[in-house]
Image 1 (cartoon, rainbow, N blue to C red):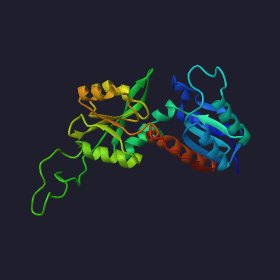
Image 2 (image 1 turned 30 degrees about the vertical axis):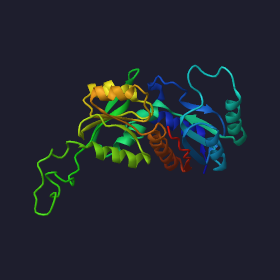
Image 3 (image 1 turned 60 degrees about the vertical axis):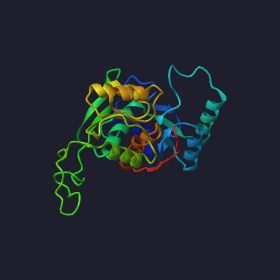
Image 4 (image 1 turned 180 degrees about the horizontal axis):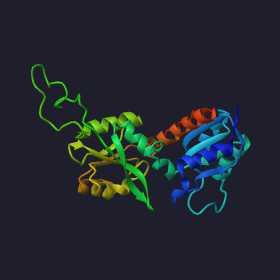
Length: 281
């Protein structure tokens, strides 16, 4: 049975609390469309290809992380924006977007989900203040008890006792972290391997979060995971003594919107489809 879009938007506002954030964009409904929703589509960024895929799926509501409207607002409708809007209007698709609220959420957000996917344990520590509100987290990475050399693991070879090594809870090898990032994001990350041998505390700010390197160092992190980095970031990472991992702006921001779509679908009895339009950036 279709659900009223106003009920879905009210639930999104309740969950994500967009009023807490001074964001770069409009959070919430950006383009009106159907008032009753049976199929919800989700995707990372609003553009023509995504809209065409949503129309092919018969979606009445498209929920994205990066919406159409940024900065001070529309000053003119150019041909690119006109085509995008026409695609939405012709298919009667409503477009809603949530940016920083979807990065920051402690259960549904990109950064929290990335932390858990990488094996973080315990409470996540709020991190990366944006105009007074934290949008990222610092994750604690436990030592794998089965790792060779762990006091609770298997011997390194037959008949040889485990090496002393750090106790469980004292982080993982940096190379293991890089491998985990590669697995959970399904892409090869850009890695500045300029931190300690083991990573105990990892700062995570999805998207374009490299400017939080100094904050990560001040917070006692061993590395920063983000999406994309500027040229200056290599020297900053070296001089801060931190690992810097850039796993892709797109790739680090698929987690939240997909998970949010699944939760809304379950709560409202909707069909949900995540529309993947991979971006190498």
